[in-house]
Amino acid sequence: MDTPETIAADYLRRGASVDIGSAISRGWALVRDNAGVLIGASALGWLITIALGCVPIVGWVLGIVLVGGLDYLFIRRIRGEAVEVGDVFAGFSLAFANLALAGLVMWLLTTLGLVLCILPGIYLVVGYVFTLPLVIDKKMDFWPAMEVSRQVVHRHWWSIFALVIVLALIAVAGFLVCVVGAIITIPVANASLMYAYEDLFGPNVALPSAEPATHE
Image (cartoon, rainbow, N blue to C red):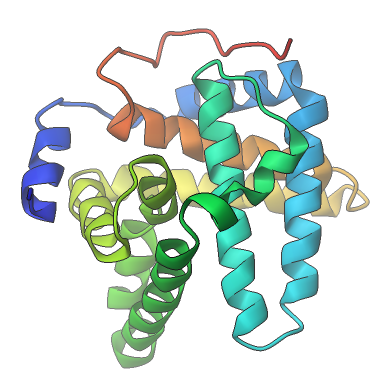
């Protein structure tokens, strides 16, 4: 069985890079051309996640599984697959245990890092950003997914960190526009992040210059 180090090395050998402007422009185009399903799925997933947040631990874990399903929905649409709003629940049938465990372990390690010295926590928050997509898309167990994400992101850490900051600002900007703008900015941020994932972990076919598929 391949180790996380071997898997990460295979991805790093591709020599992929993270282009923030390209990721955001492609994310915007994807949401623009598939507004109904992507905005609908995002709204449904995040509303349920927020509601579940009221239930200690269990609700948070279920919310993580929903986020994983939402990430996978975006990845599939990026690849030209047909998706439906209900696909946001795919994490419960495809990778429930590993998504839940990934969420819990990431929370424990990043919280520990933030409490002890802040900087290690920030490093891990960014390093683990692709863990959930790797679990549900690549069918990895939670720990290998965490380590592969961290090791690949380590090579591109500052670029991914900058992307995360820019996407957070885009999402916040949506809330400042009477909150309603977040209905668009949050899906765009998610789509942009999944394009960065696809550039680093997707099929060997080069994707950065490809036009996003439109919803049929």
